[in-house]
Length: 257
Image 1 (cartoon, rainbow, N blue to C red):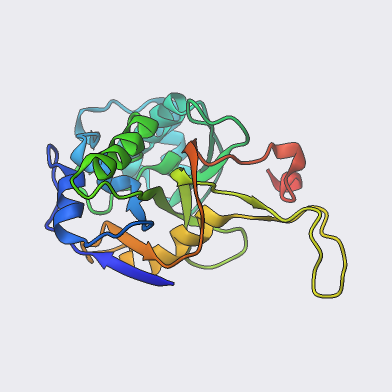
Image 2: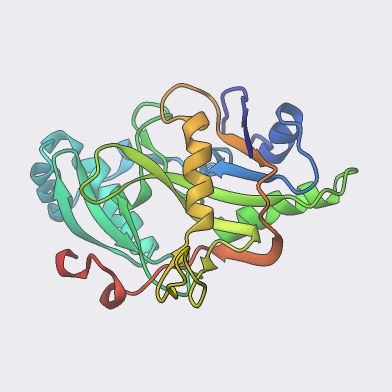
């Protein structure tokens, strides 16, 4: 399997992301493109101007709990984003709030994410950037462009974001949405090396690919908002939408959620 970074110019609102990715990345039939959710939100003009927000009492309280009373405007944006994504704040630590969100169109489970997906990195000062306002429409548009160009290539798309794992230091990545591949592969009913039947195992294919791509995309000033994954051996499918999760009562972490 190859992971090929797509270096681009600095993205800004109004840019044609699909055209930029095509110009700077040499895609082939069957490739999967992992694209940063923040890159899509940036070109679609979804950056939030924190300076115009009036922080509520809840936002001021959350800012104090996370150790930065001056960040009340940012946490007002977090609270508003939670409402948009049908979520809630469920915890906090120094520097961040833990949120559980269930975006429109997500059929199963929740997404645990810091600050409702909002970030102040790689966005102009005084602003925050989160997930695209209509992420399903965004991924569909991207994939359609690759299908309708002269090449007519079958391309899979994954929209990713950085994430944290319980009790692990550092960030990896999560697949928020997928188009053209099945994000989950069930191994239930298959045998292991010793003939033991697997009962509960599912492979998080899209999450694994998102993290693999994140290794070359980075999280700082790399200017690599996407990566091509090639020779992966994963069949194409008609799946398109939010990657499904599980309900809290089925989660191994349920006692701490």
